[in-house]
Length: 99
Image (cartoon, rainbow, N blue to C red; front, side):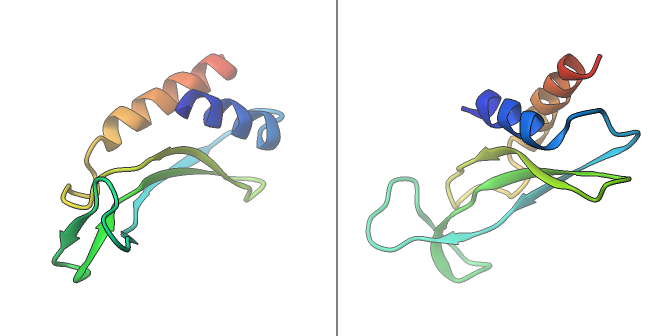
């Protein structure tokens, strides 16, 4: 699924490579209701939640933003959990698209 999201984002937003691309990783707590799978109590936000990790890209010259990766994580992990693995996969995909 992550590979498809990256390919779609590149096709829609990146017709040519930017000189500089800034990757922004952001984990945000997503409050859950009821008994959802992988929802845990998080003391920081004082709620039951999941913690999706999103990786966005911004091209320096154009100012375009594109969602390059998303990973739904349980609410009991650190926000940066698996972030380096996602960034590595995204950079590999970018290098493949723009050798």
